[in-house]
Amino acid sequence: MSGRSESTRPYVLLSCAASIDGYIDDASDHRLLLSNEDDLDRVDAVRASCDAILVGAGTVRRDNPRLLVRSADRRAERVAGGRPESPAKVTVTAQGDLDPTARFFTAGEATRLVYCATGAAEKTRERLGRVATVVDAGEPVDPDWMLTDLAARGVRRLMVEGGGTVHAQFLTAGLADELHLVVAPFFVGDGRAPRFVGEGRFPWHPGRRARLAEARQIGDVVLLRYALSDRCPAA
Image (cartoon, rainbow, N blue to C red; front, side, top):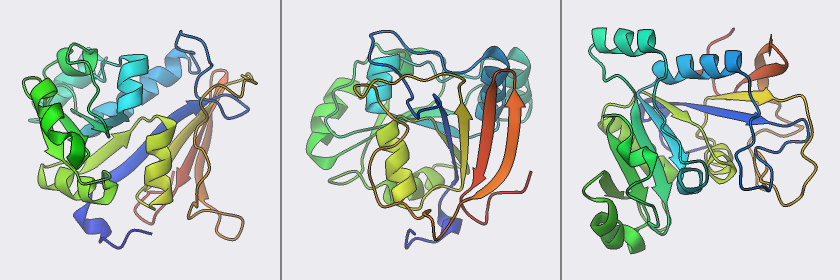
């Protein structure tokens, strides 16, 4: 587990959808739809409950996500509570090779933060400084330090939407409080495709099982909600 006190970092919720055999996409050029409309609405509600949403640079390049709250009612509720319509957008990059015209940077009015490795900080500021706040987060990027910095910026609840490399970094570092894993009712069966997480030393293993807080059918998918810290509430 991280040596830093949990009280100094945001509550971290990981969200992922995967096939039965653990893939989060296929190897084609088109994004694989793993969820369904009811579950996407659930994800939208989770987004609306958070202060920031984090994705890796690979997800920004591959999926070109908007990372906005879709529901007009939820956006209005956030504004009525004194919050922006959508959570802040956060990404992490080692090289800074992100397109400033990607929807991450252009869609909506949310705050945009780019945490980058020290060696790429100057280049990244030149490339993205007009569309985002670029933060030097160490060499390599230190997720523990990044969480403390996010907390200092007012982020109390962080939703991490992937991809697999980012999820693995938070999980292996013991920096996750909760995992929402949605299982889609099909197989991908292609070793070229990305998986939920790769190899690593995870705090949860046969001798230390994660606590299943909830299992819920949502149409043709199932949501498995795992409590990964004592901060995760029961169902």
